[in-house]
Length: 613
Ligand code: SF4
Ligand code: SF4
Image (cartoon, rainbow, N blue to C red):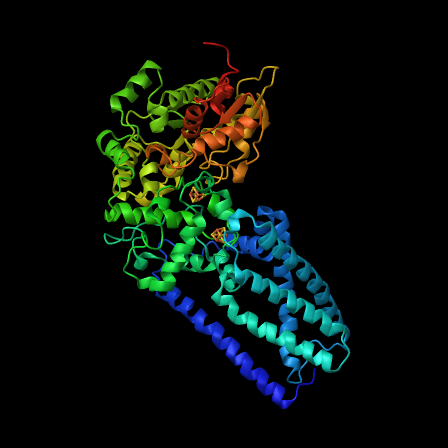
């Protein structure tokens, strides 16, 4: 289009207003990000995984599509269409000033304009689908109807329609009016971005690329004045960037076991609470984060299952936030709650989470003739609180010991062990964790322990990852990994194969990415069935994050909800690979009127193939 001088002047003024409105809000975001504290224990290296996750999650939209295939593909078309449109948009403004990057007369220009026309049709269809989903189908996860989303969808549709019309309209008044309509839509769209959740258009590529490496990474405290996430001053740059990026899609909410069983907790609201705080008080705010902006009760209802973090398509890491908020509450003692008080007392007095005398552990070891670790064995078998004191946990340990003996794997247990500190760590009591972790590390070093194995994914995670904060680097595996490696050395299977429905424990699956190993063990002896929510979508048993020790839950109990789902598969055996899961399901199944299915750990399934003692 050939624009007159008056049109060019009008365009410059309108564009300046649009950019100014964009910057006026975006400047506040930049200021908050700059004022936020640096993220401790953060490094961009290694860069390779970051590039890979950027290509998969942003460029290919892989996570968005995998999470919700239909809506994800529609979103991907809008995203790819926008990328294709970037050059066309520059060309659109340039042509008003007599420059053409894409001359329609050239083969290249024509081909690109036609290519983008195909994208315009795809984007128009996709945005209509997303609009219908949001405003007609209205999934509960999306929350209240958002006028902004409707306005943005309308603008995107108008952009596509005016682009297509511009290709076919002959030169004249109609084409000129259409050109201006397209221009005004673009100029209205720009300031809406930072004022709405569509800020993710600008931030999410950076958020995905820059997020902390490692799942549920709890940052170390920096010095005596660092208590966790207490006030705005404790919010890190990465936390702030993630909070501003939330697109309010509700995928985290959809997968949250607490939300789905009627608790106050909604992980999306935790992220949005941080955002509201930063918008109102900035990253130097001195008011506590918990209270007016984020519910304290909600923060303590989390099982740390990681369903939210796994589901989020824009790289938001909820667990450093939630555990950080708990740390802020517990370490400062600012809140008069007694979350975990009994647990912390047990850890202090007895060194284990269940509150038993340490002598009970020794009696169990000696009665069952478990060998003590003396440095000559291949593995140190870490019992953990559940393996040492809980009756069902002990059965799992004994089953594993039988299988290891059969396979010719040597092992020994420690003479003394304290809790790894897992529940206290997730509940935010750093002092309690330090006390037990440091005592354990000393014991393990004195015993010159090399390789370790444990039946508990929580112990594996805490020893293998969380204790690094205390300078420890132990080589520990979960028993499913060791048993899967043993392969043909495992007990031979009988002929009859029942069906086992396998429940993926959160701390084994999402935290450790171990999904196939327990299935490989069970497959030797049984047909493995998956419940509807399996692998990285597995639904928590309700024990993690210290919940096992917090007592009564509000709403429906999480273990009951999951046990019902497992029962609905009709499998006669429920397979687990975590003593916490097993304990939670035993509790849930105990209330059944009909005969409950068998509940077995993978070690018990393997040991059942051994001849009776
Ligand atoms: S970790 Fe699990 S329980 Fe906690 S907020 Fe996320 S999904 Fe909900
Ligand atoms: S935190 Fe992530 S998953 Fe949850 S609503 Fe925001 S963008 Fe969606």
